[in-house]
Length: 154
Image (cartoon, rainbow, N blue to C red; front, side):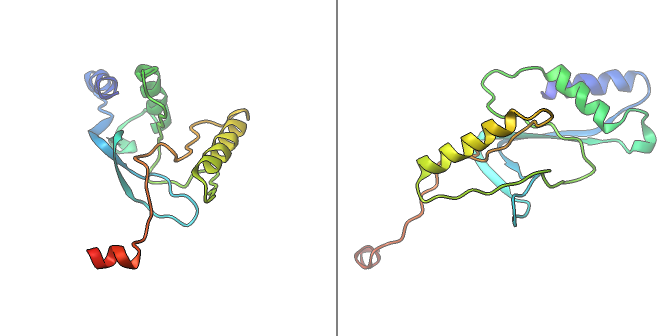
């Protein structure tokens, strides 16, 4: 993906129209571009996540729109082996998702089944893409409290 972005940058720079100010990669985490209901921007640390952020030159200095650059980057990147979820977003800043749902259930298996069912249903709708189910962002989280005996043991 970085090589694809760098090739686009070189191509446009050769024509006298540099389009990217910077290309940055974060491996082992990502900053949330979308918050769910009631959430705010956060950073997630997860060995299975990565993020590439490209800062464009000001729109007044280029004739190519951010949407055109996004499409070109998506095309040049192609399919990535082993990638479960890929989102390429062109925006002037963080945006909220067009649709956001938060599901909860005390049993992980039931929650995962409901999330997968909702994601599968949404995927069948024409025009819906980049569905983020939030289940595979990182390692499993366990919430627990100590018993009085555990607290006494330190």
